[in-house]
Image (cartoon, rainbow, N blue to C red; front, side):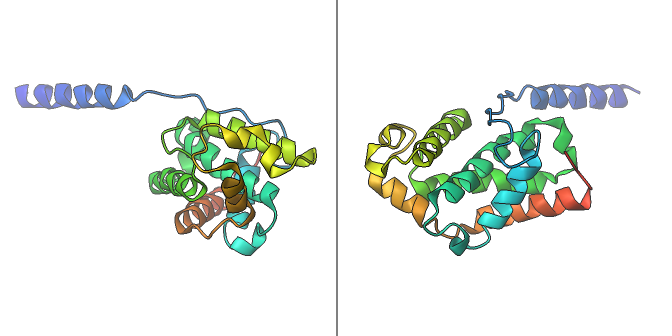
Length: 184
């Protein structure tokens, strides 16, 4: 009886330690950023899995690349934090975390920056481009979380390389959303 009690107490202690993992808020995206989807999540999964499957899909289209990069950065937190995504495999969630790191490295974005800061900066760049700004005039490219010179960052966005971890993570998430019949 004492063994069971001790085992139970140890299990509860371990569970309490695991539950103390700090929960961060998921960054905000403009409503309908990924199309007609109310909450953006399914749209972000679909758009990023499509865009990151082949570099030709975003070639010379920095706005599409920015949407794919935002999706990976945002989904790394969204899939982990939002209980709605309990149907997504823990392995897929880990893959999305690694994809965020790899995408950031490819673009010269600080891996330590908060997702909120990265998403906000990328949204600012997208708005500037939509308004016709030239890359060297976009102030968001000149500040953290970007570590490369502005034109080099823009060049990376215009020629987003193939990032295997991002392709795998977004494809896995899309497959699991489809399999589980999730709709917004």
